[in-house]
Length: 604
Image (cartoon, rainbow, N blue to C red; front, side, top):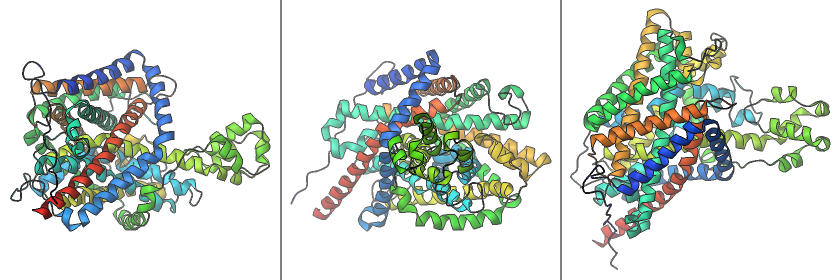
């Protein structure tokens, strides 16, 4: 039985001359219109924009939280199956005699720096500390927040957010793009990954739409990453220089001011545009190697001066605990708890509360960011005689949903929005490697490094708080300042100054690497997969990216609930949802392509 050859006649029409020469006009113009409209909206009506983005995000999470969770779990299991199966794992991304373009060291350093570099600097201490105080095990009442018993579950969820699932998201996109580009000689662009399902339709409007979704997701994902990184960069410069204008004037827990954030953003993005102009072969490669060297120095500082034994103990127990709960965390999705469902779960005595008091109790009992003690203290007078433990227990489903939607789903949306950028970048640097090598090299290896990084740096911070040395100084610092607060508790004098300066340089190079890689990826999509794009378009998209971040920072700092990254995060989660759907179809398309190609190989 003959098998029909795969569709490979992908034709992405590009402008033959003029300003957009070599670029697809529909993709470029639609993407620019969307992002320009977002910037103008956020600048002209910042408070309104921030409020609407928050409301839309809340509604989407209520309806699509389970979709995010289950989809990402499916991505991880799908890739592990591909790596295990001999027929798929041994397939080479390219001709049989193709050799990898980059050495293993450069390959790893580039994927590491582009994939999670800034995130690891910002959240190395903030993530374990935050989860130590709030995670599903704590919310269930099984362990107390910020206790010795809560450390293991804190690392279970730290590993979840920065482990196999995160890298599986990147690798699914990257493997899909690399497979079609290097085995079927198709353009290195998002729509290529859907050709087994779309066929000739990929050459029309549907194909343009898929690529536009990839560009929009990339911009928003990179924007959130740079936003967090710029905040930490400002914290670091302030720690070194003491320049008060960089901060908001709060003496107890100073935060970067809007002026400080925007000033740092302009510096970082200026350097990023210069690096992007130099191309992947020079700028990104050299910066990635520098990132890896400086990261090792920082890691060794924590090994020798931090709580290394404590960290390694938690690494071992946390890894085992993570693997044991891997399937449950992959597919255990929660839904919102309605006021009616909460009332039905209450003890009979509590159901007679006045409507206003019952509403207040419902809001407090289902809040994932509170505690039993705080809930009990805040009970209205009419509920003072009730069993607070039983009333609080009735709101556990709501707390679990709120926590998952606000934490795990936020990460999944962030990594998904980041995946066109990282995935396409991984595809560009992975020609000549096998499917198994690509999956194991880009999922298992960097995840283990992330685990070690989080336990060595974050474990030191937790240990300093557990033994009383820090006396709340690290927990009390902002997320982007927690790394510097930990260093201040760990070392002192000139050595502290030197390491702090090195951290500022490391953050800056991670930011530049992420931004210039994102600029190159956006131009690759808009040029129909061409890896060499015009310098003027790299500059323009660098400026657009800067405008998006700056405008959403201003919008986030407007209104009553001032949060410079609130609007950025909400826009990113909203923009990631359509691309999550695209990724589900990518997975189905890749499964179909691999299966059909294996049948063709047997027929030959």
